[in-house]
Length: 301
Ligand SMILES: NC(=O)c1ccc[n+]([C@@H]2O[C@H](COP(=O)([O-])OP(=O)(O)OC[C@H]3O[C@@H](n4cnc5c(N)ncnc54)[C@H](OP(=O)(O)O)[C@@H]3O)[C@@H](O)[C@H]2O)c1
Image (cartoon, rainbow, N blue to C red; front, side, top):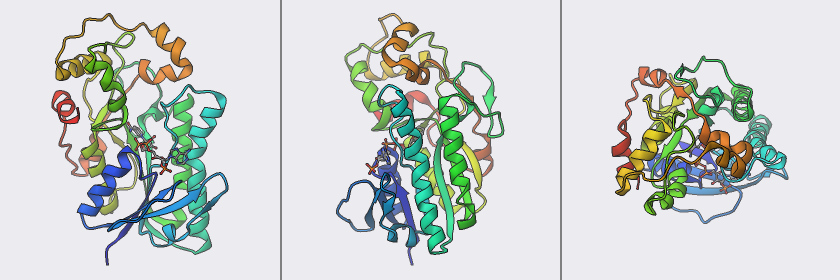
Protein backbone atom coordinates (compact mmCIF):
# COMPACT_ATOMS: atom_id res chain seq x y z
CA UNK A 1 0.00 0.00 0.00
CA UNK A 2 1.17 3.53 -0.78
CA UNK A 3 2.55 5.48 2.18
CA UNK A 4 0.52 8.57 2.97
CA UNK A 5 2.27 11.87 3.56
CA UNK A 6 0.29 14.69 5.16
CA UNK A 7 1.51 18.23 4.39
CA UNK A 8 0.26 21.11 6.53
CA UNK A 9 0.14 24.37 4.55
CA UNK A 10 0.64 22.23 1.46
CA UNK A 11 -1.17 24.80 -0.68
CA UNK A 12 1.81 27.21 -0.53
CA UNK A 13 4.89 27.61 -2.71
CA UNK A 14 6.94 24.81 -1.14
CA UNK A 15 3.95 22.55 -0.48
CA UNK A 16 2.64 22.53 -4.04
CA UNK A 17 6.05 21.63 -5.46
CA UNK A 18 6.63 19.03 -2.76
CA UNK A 19 3.22 17.40 -3.23
CA UNK A 20 3.95 17.04 -6.97
CA UNK A 21 7.32 15.39 -6.27
CA UNK A 22 5.93 12.99 -3.64
CA UNK A 23 3.08 11.89 -5.93
CA UNK A 24 5.59 11.38 -8.76
CA UNK A 25 7.63 9.17 -6.37
CA UNK A 26 4.60 6.98 -5.65
CA UNK A 27 3.31 8.43 -2.36
CA UNK A 28 -0.26 9.30 -1.61
CA UNK A 29 -0.40 12.93 -0.43
CA UNK A 30 -2.88 14.72 1.83
CA UNK A 31 -2.98 18.43 2.49
CA UNK A 32 -4.21 20.08 5.66
CA UNK A 33 -5.51 23.53 4.80
CA UNK A 34 -7.66 26.26 6.31
CA UNK A 35 -9.93 26.04 3.26
CA UNK A 36 -11.64 22.97 1.84
CA UNK A 37 -10.68 22.03 -1.71
CA UNK A 38 -11.76 19.21 -4.03
CA UNK A 39 -9.76 16.00 -3.91
CA UNK A 40 -7.73 14.93 -6.94
CA UNK A 41 -6.15 11.60 -7.82
CA UNK A 42 -3.50 10.85 -5.14
CA UNK A 43 -4.12 14.27 -3.54
CA UNK A 44 -6.60 14.60 -0.67
CA UNK A 45 -7.59 17.77 1.12
CA UNK A 46 -8.49 18.02 4.79
CA UNK A 47 -9.48 21.08 6.77
CA UNK A 48 -8.56 22.60 10.09
CA UNK A 49 -9.55 25.67 12.02
CA UNK A 50 -6.53 26.49 14.07
CA UNK A 51 -8.16 29.28 16.09
CA UNK A 52 -11.08 27.04 17.08
CA UNK A 53 -8.71 24.11 17.67
CA UNK A 54 -10.60 21.76 15.34
CA UNK A 55 -9.52 19.57 12.43
CA UNK A 56 -10.49 16.57 10.27
CA UNK A 57 -8.84 13.96 12.46
CA UNK A 58 -8.65 11.44 9.56
CA UNK A 59 -5.90 13.61 8.10
CA UNK A 60 -3.62 12.58 10.96
CA UNK A 61 -5.02 9.07 11.40
CA UNK A 62 -4.24 8.07 7.78
CA UNK A 63 -0.79 9.69 7.75
CA UNK A 64 2.44 7.69 7.89
CA UNK A 65 4.47 10.85 7.96
CA UNK A 66 3.64 14.54 8.50
CA UNK A 67 5.44 17.50 6.95
CA UNK A 68 4.60 20.76 8.72
CA UNK A 69 4.92 23.77 6.40
CA UNK A 70 1.97 25.87 7.60
CA UNK A 71 2.73 29.34 8.80
CA UNK A 72 1.80 32.97 8.32
CA UNK A 73 4.07 34.61 5.73
CA UNK A 74 7.04 36.08 7.61
CA UNK A 75 7.79 38.86 5.13
CA UNK A 76 4.17 39.68 4.22
CA UNK A 77 3.57 42.75 6.40
CA UNK A 78 5.25 44.93 9.05
CA UNK A 79 5.97 43.14 12.31
CA UNK A 80 3.37 44.68 14.60
CA UNK A 81 2.77 42.98 17.95
CA UNK A 82 -0.31 41.23 16.51
CA UNK A 83 1.58 40.15 13.39
CA UNK A 84 4.45 38.73 15.44
CA UNK A 85 1.95 36.70 17.47
CA UNK A 86 0.33 35.41 14.26
CA UNK A 87 3.73 34.40 12.83
CA UNK A 88 4.57 32.41 15.96
CA UNK A 89 1.12 30.97 16.73
CA UNK A 90 0.52 29.78 13.14
CA UNK A 91 3.61 27.58 13.42
CA UNK A 92 3.31 26.36 17.01
CA UNK A 93 -0.44 25.93 17.67
CA UNK A 94 -1.01 23.56 14.68
CA UNK A 95 1.61 21.15 16.05
CA UNK A 96 -0.16 21.08 19.41
CA UNK A 97 -3.40 20.22 17.59
CA UNK A 98 -1.72 17.40 15.66
CA UNK A 99 -0.09 16.07 18.82
CA UNK A 100 -3.46 16.01 20.61
CA UNK A 101 -4.93 13.83 17.82
CA UNK A 102 -1.90 11.50 17.84
CA UNK A 103 -2.26 11.15 21.61
CA UNK A 104 -6.04 10.61 21.49
CA UNK A 105 -5.67 7.65 19.10
CA UNK A 106 -2.23 6.55 20.34
CA UNK A 107 -1.02 6.79 16.76
CA UNK A 108 2.68 6.61 15.83
CA UNK A 109 4.18 8.26 12.75
CA UNK A 110 7.28 7.15 10.85
CA UNK A 111 8.46 10.76 10.99
CA UNK A 112 7.34 14.28 11.86
CA UNK A 113 9.18 16.74 9.65
CA UNK A 114 8.97 20.48 10.14
CA UNK A 115 10.11 23.51 8.21
CA UNK A 116 12.33 25.91 10.13
CA UNK A 117 14.56 28.75 9.03
CA UNK A 118 18.24 29.67 9.01
CA UNK A 119 17.05 32.78 10.89
CA UNK A 120 17.47 30.53 13.94
CA UNK A 121 21.16 31.56 13.96
CA UNK A 122 20.28 35.25 14.13
CA UNK A 123 20.38 38.23 11.81
CA UNK A 124 23.88 39.67 11.78
CA UNK A 125 26.47 40.26 9.13
CA UNK A 126 29.39 37.97 9.70
CA UNK A 127 31.37 35.54 7.61
CA UNK A 128 31.16 32.95 10.40
CA UNK A 129 29.64 29.75 8.98
CA UNK A 130 26.81 28.36 11.12
CA UNK A 131 26.58 24.61 11.57
CA UNK A 132 23.53 22.97 13.15
CA UNK A 133 25.19 23.06 16.59
CA UNK A 134 26.04 26.78 16.43
CA UNK A 135 24.53 29.03 19.11
CA UNK A 136 20.92 29.99 18.42
CA UNK A 137 19.68 33.56 18.44
CA UNK A 138 17.25 35.28 20.78
CA UNK A 139 16.03 37.92 18.31
CA UNK A 140 12.46 37.66 16.97
CA UNK A 141 13.09 35.18 14.14
CA UNK A 142 15.59 33.19 16.19
CA UNK A 143 12.99 32.82 18.95
CA UNK A 144 10.22 31.87 16.49
CA UNK A 145 12.40 29.19 14.89
CA UNK A 146 13.47 27.81 18.28
CA UNK A 147 9.86 27.55 19.48
CA UNK A 148 8.80 26.05 16.12
CA UNK A 149 11.48 23.35 16.48
CA UNK A 150 10.81 22.82 20.19
CA UNK A 151 7.10 22.12 19.63
CA UNK A 152 8.06 19.66 16.85
CA UNK A 153 10.30 17.85 19.36
CA UNK A 154 7.25 17.44 21.61
CA UNK A 155 5.78 15.09 18.95
CA UNK A 156 8.62 12.61 19.63
CA UNK A 157 6.56 10.15 21.72
CA UNK A 158 4.36 9.76 18.64
CA UNK A 159 6.98 9.70 15.86
CA UNK A 160 10.05 7.56 15.29
CA UNK A 161 12.01 10.54 13.97
CA UNK A 162 11.75 14.34 14.16
CA UNK A 163 13.44 16.24 11.32
CA UNK A 164 13.85 20.03 11.21
CA UNK A 165 14.64 21.61 7.85
CA UNK A 166 16.36 24.97 8.48
CA UNK A 167 15.57 26.57 5.16
CA UNK A 168 17.38 29.42 3.39
CA UNK A 169 15.81 31.68 0.77
CA UNK A 170 13.91 29.41 -1.61
CA UNK A 171 14.41 30.24 -5.30
CA UNK A 172 12.06 29.00 -8.00
CA UNK A 173 8.97 29.99 -9.89
CA UNK A 174 7.11 31.44 -6.90
CA UNK A 175 7.73 32.72 -3.38
CA UNK A 176 10.07 35.65 -2.76
CA UNK A 177 11.37 35.81 -6.32
CA UNK A 178 7.87 36.35 -7.73
CA UNK A 179 7.55 39.46 -5.57
CA UNK A 180 11.02 40.81 -6.43
CA UNK A 181 11.04 40.05 -10.14
CA UNK A 182 8.73 42.82 -11.44
CA UNK A 183 11.08 45.45 -9.95
CA UNK A 184 14.04 43.93 -11.76
CA UNK A 185 12.07 43.47 -14.97
CA UNK A 186 11.44 47.24 -14.85
CA UNK A 187 15.24 47.60 -14.44
CA UNK A 188 14.67 49.29 -11.07
CA UNK A 189 16.15 46.59 -8.86
CA UNK A 190 19.30 47.55 -6.98
CA UNK A 191 21.57 46.56 -4.12
CA UNK A 192 20.00 46.85 -0.64
CA UNK A 193 21.88 48.66 2.14
CA UNK A 194 25.57 47.78 2.31
CA UNK A 195 25.00 44.82 -0.02
CA UNK A 196 27.35 42.79 2.16
CA UNK A 197 24.62 40.80 3.92
CA UNK A 198 24.81 37.08 3.11
CA UNK A 199 21.79 35.46 1.43
CA UNK A 200 22.01 31.66 1.69
CA UNK A 201 19.63 30.25 -0.94
CA UNK A 202 18.31 26.92 -2.19
CA UNK A 203 16.49 25.94 -5.38
CA UNK A 204 12.94 24.72 -4.78
CA UNK A 205 13.75 21.34 -6.43
CA UNK A 206 16.66 20.78 -4.04
CA UNK A 207 14.51 21.73 -1.05
CA UNK A 208 11.80 19.29 -2.13
CA UNK A 209 14.47 16.62 -2.62
CA UNK A 210 15.63 17.24 0.99
CA UNK A 211 12.05 16.73 2.25
CA UNK A 212 11.83 13.53 0.17
CA UNK A 213 15.11 12.39 1.75
CA UNK A 214 13.66 13.19 5.19
CA UNK A 215 10.66 10.96 4.41
CA UNK A 216 12.63 8.04 3.02
CA UNK A 217 16.01 8.07 4.79
CA UNK A 218 15.67 6.59 8.26
CA UNK A 219 19.07 7.96 9.24
CA UNK A 220 17.77 11.50 8.95
CA UNK A 221 16.98 12.82 12.40
CA UNK A 222 17.27 16.26 14.02
CA UNK A 223 18.12 19.61 12.41
CA UNK A 224 19.60 20.14 8.94
CA UNK A 225 20.56 23.35 7.17
CA UNK A 226 18.91 23.49 3.76
CA UNK A 227 20.83 26.12 1.80
CA UNK A 228 23.79 26.29 -0.52
CA UNK A 229 27.05 27.10 1.25
CA UNK A 230 28.51 29.83 -0.92
CA UNK A 231 29.38 33.51 -0.75
CA UNK A 232 26.17 35.00 -2.13
CA UNK A 233 25.70 38.45 -0.65
CA UNK A 234 22.87 40.83 -1.48
CA UNK A 235 25.22 42.65 -3.89
CA UNK A 236 26.05 39.40 -5.71
CA UNK A 237 22.40 38.34 -5.74
CA UNK A 238 21.10 41.71 -7.03
CA UNK A 239 23.76 42.01 -9.75
CA UNK A 240 23.17 38.42 -10.89
CA UNK A 241 19.40 38.82 -11.01
CA UNK A 242 19.79 42.07 -13.00
CA UNK A 243 22.11 40.26 -15.42
CA UNK A 244 19.64 37.38 -15.82
CA UNK A 245 16.79 39.74 -16.71
CA UNK A 246 19.08 41.68 -19.05
CA UNK A 247 20.51 44.85 -17.49
CA UNK A 248 23.36 46.20 -15.40
CA UNK A 249 22.36 47.82 -12.11
CA UNK A 250 22.42 51.59 -12.60
CA UNK A 251 20.58 52.85 -9.53
CA UNK A 252 22.55 53.50 -6.32
CA UNK A 253 22.04 51.08 -3.42
CA UNK A 254 18.78 51.58 -1.51
CA UNK A 255 19.85 53.17 1.81
CA UNK A 256 19.31 51.00 4.87
CA UNK A 257 17.53 53.84 6.73
CA UNK A 258 14.85 54.02 4.00
CA UNK A 259 14.25 50.28 4.23
CA UNK A 260 13.97 50.57 8.02
CA UNK A 261 11.58 53.51 7.67
CA UNK A 262 9.24 51.54 5.38
CA UNK A 263 9.52 48.09 6.93
CA UNK A 264 10.29 48.80 10.58
CA UNK A 265 11.74 45.77 12.41
CA UNK A 266 10.96 43.50 9.41
CA UNK A 267 13.81 45.28 7.58
CA UNK A 268 16.22 42.98 9.38
CA UNK A 269 15.40 40.12 7.02
CA UNK A 270 16.82 42.00 4.04
CA UNK A 271 19.47 44.11 5.75
CA UNK A 272 21.20 41.31 7.63
CA UNK A 273 22.14 37.75 6.83
CA UNK A 274 24.26 34.87 7.94
CA UNK A 275 26.28 32.06 6.36
CA UNK A 276 25.35 28.44 6.90
CA UNK A 277 27.10 25.14 6.36
CA UNK A 278 25.51 22.47 4.17
CA UNK A 279 27.99 19.78 5.31
CA UNK A 280 25.58 17.82 7.53
CA UNK A 281 23.01 17.09 4.82
CA UNK A 282 25.78 16.38 2.27
CA UNK A 283 27.40 13.89 4.67
CA UNK A 284 24.19 11.85 4.34
CA UNK A 285 24.96 11.54 0.63
CA UNK A 286 22.57 14.31 -0.46
CA UNK A 287 23.75 16.18 -3.56
CA UNK A 288 22.46 19.63 -4.46
CA UNK A 289 21.50 19.87 -8.15
CA UNK A 290 21.60 23.67 -8.20
CA UNK A 291 24.81 25.21 -6.90
CA UNK A 292 25.32 28.07 -9.35
CA UNK A 293 23.30 31.21 -8.59
CA UNK A 294 23.11 32.51 -12.16
CA UNK A 295 21.93 29.16 -13.55
CA UNK A 296 19.41 28.87 -10.69
CA UNK A 297 18.01 32.34 -11.34
CA UNK A 298 17.83 31.64 -15.10
CA UNK A 299 15.87 28.49 -14.32
CA UNK A 300 13.57 30.37 -11.93
CA UNK A 301 12.56 33.50 -13.85
N1 LIG B 1 9.85 30.17 0.92
C1 LIG B 1 10.95 30.48 1.60
O1 LIG B 1 11.87 31.19 1.10
C2 LIG B 1 11.13 29.94 3.01
C3 LIG B 1 12.37 30.14 3.66
C4 LIG B 1 12.51 29.67 4.96
C5 LIG B 1 11.48 29.00 5.61
N2 LIG B 1 10.30 28.83 4.93
C6 LIG B 1 9.18 28.18 5.65
O2 LIG B 1 8.71 27.06 4.93
C7 LIG B 1 7.28 26.95 5.07
C8 LIG B 1 6.65 26.88 3.69
O3 LIG B 1 7.04 28.03 2.95
P1 LIG B 1 6.21 28.55 1.69
O4 LIG B 1 7.10 29.48 0.96
O5 LIG B 1 5.58 27.41 0.99
O6 LIG B 1 5.06 29.41 2.43
P2 LIG B 1 3.67 29.92 1.82
O7 LIG B 1 3.68 29.87 0.33
O8 LIG B 1 3.39 31.23 2.49
O9 LIG B 1 2.64 28.80 2.31
C9 LIG B 1 2.41 28.54 3.66
C10 LIG B 1 1.04 27.91 3.85
O10 LIG B 1 0.73 27.99 5.24
C11 LIG B 1 -0.66 28.18 5.42
N3 LIG B 1 -0.87 29.35 6.29
C12 LIG B 1 -0.68 30.66 6.02
N4 LIG B 1 -1.01 31.41 7.07
C13 LIG B 1 -1.43 30.56 8.03
C14 LIG B 1 -1.94 30.73 9.35
N5 LIG B 1 -2.10 31.93 9.89
N6 LIG B 1 -2.25 29.61 10.05
C15 LIG B 1 -2.10 28.37 9.50
N7 LIG B 1 -1.67 28.15 8.26
C16 LIG B 1 -1.33 29.24 7.54
C17 LIG B 1 -1.30 28.46 4.05
O11 LIG B 1 -2.04 27.29 3.69
P3 LIG B 1 -3.67 27.26 3.74
O12 LIG B 1 -4.12 28.62 3.28
O13 LIG B 1 -4.01 26.19 2.76
O14 LIG B 1 -4.06 26.96 5.13
C18 LIG B 1 -0.10 28.64 3.12
O15 LIG B 1 -0.33 28.12 1.84
C19 LIG B 1 6.83 28.18 5.85
O16 LIG B 1 6.61 27.83 7.20
C20 LIG B 1 7.99 29.14 5.75
O17 LIG B 1 8.13 30.02 6.85
C21 LIG B 1 10.09 29.28 3.66
